[in-house]
Image (cartoon, rainbow, N blue to C red; front, side, top):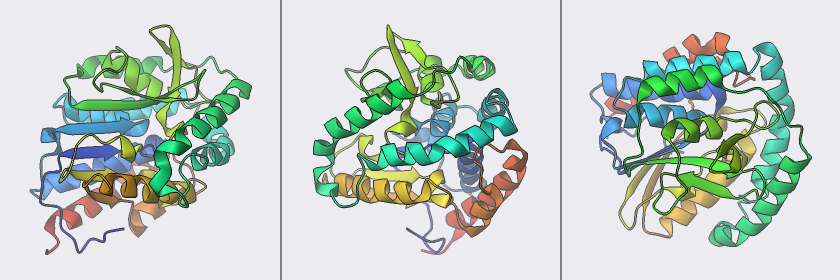
Length: 304
């Protein structure tokens, strides 16, 4: 992983924003704000933005051309609707299971065959989702904030979700993909299984895209010489750290095989410490924002 000695000065062609709960959203928002404050690239101008779960909130905010504080309101509503401490505890209990599901299709032993692992990954996910409890809690408050964003699919945005029945990954916003509003796509990408009800779009049910991959980096649009910047909050620590690292190895190599340039950023030591053990602990959001802002400024101003 790159360190803070490598400055970020070039606008990437594609920005990939991973899953990470309330605190992952805060870290991504703080990091991008720190970059902007230090005269780094304006990431609202990226050619493509791919968002998964928490990252889809940030992605929709950027595509709407809005300040990232708007995304913060959606993330806080998300945490509240998760049920506070109860929701955070439930997320900790299931995160190990989600990590095992993700590992089934993102083994570091087979990055060259990522596409061939997809059918097995779909089967594992479909079986686990079918056997899981079916919550009724919905993200109504988050929906209100997304309505206020006014984001539209304009060819730049991709939102990763998983179809509940089949376990397959779907990217709303990609050419030929199913129709959806940005609002519904983001709600689906944030519908953490075991916590929130699936979101129905076009007669099909969808859940959190993080069930497929913590970042869905391999879905980044572009061809040879495309510059991709990926933010991976779940690499900070906890039960998802190992599987995030495994997925990143496989997915980065898949993109490099297509001739793309990839750089991945993860929380530094200060940001990881601020995040703590629960990614849905909204009480830590301000500390995470502060640490991430400092990390972003350092990345923008470092020599080289």
